[in-house]
Image (cartoon, rainbow, N blue to C red):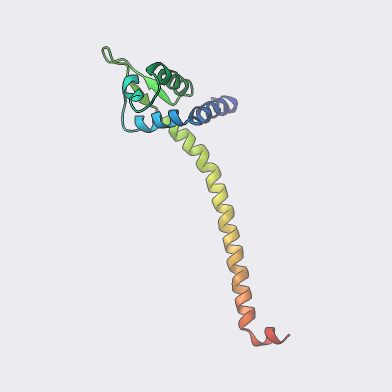
Length: 125
């Protein structure tokens, strides 16, 4: 997969997760596979509406469907979620490194100020 395809897949996944109903569906599927009827139970929308949400999640690569006799359970694709987590973590780690450097700089400055305040020669000048 090239960089453009990876970016497109990330875009689709984040757009799919922008909807609160789809996030709740993902949360439910994290506990195990479920049918559309089972996924629709907590919502005040039709099973057709839930099916449309599942189609969005499926086209984003976040869920898959299988066939077990008459049932068509929906499954969460954990690998797709891991890809999203890796992308987020990359930028979180960069931000954390910047905050650590700032903390170290502030600690050094505070230590210098405390040393200067306790040095009688520095206070008299």
